[in-house]
Length: 241
Image (cartoon, rainbow, N blue to C red; front, side):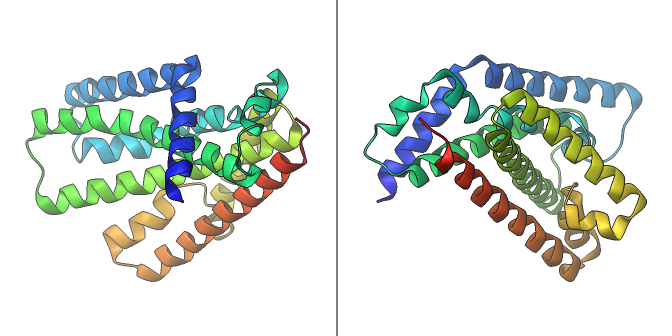
């Protein structure tokens, strides 16, 4: 049962990799990671390089990359007519949509890893092998960043499907993102409801042992995943071939 679905997701990911946008974003992410290592060494930046890089890049750059991927994940296939080939496959629209979402989510994870890997290697070269506990924190931060970035891909895809345009969907997604960020800046408690920062749920658990805060924010994160997926699926189903 799972084999056809995994195959579909793999094919969709290969389709994204054959496109120019994902290759450019992966290359940019890797170069940014390498550049961050050399800059941090030159200025004597202390602390975990991978974690610091993720925190800084997740304020603007990585969210923009995720919105760029998500906004063009499906809507472009309806505009150029290539979706007809996929709809002829002996699978339901729900399965096709889920496979594409999983491929987009994986693409977002690869972009995050493209930043993490060079900074992690750089930290070993310049700072030595981290302790086991520090390594665990790095991996937890990485997992949190991937989960957060995947959400942005899901939400951006949903917005673009509803507005019917990748470029307009990207602009709308960015405006919504900025509005939520500004609201969170002036109203921190209200801002937590928007889940605009992956640190809101992973860091209380890692650094303060505050399980309650992390679980509460994780529930909101899960709710946004569910809402984004359902709204995207509804828009995907109502579109004509």
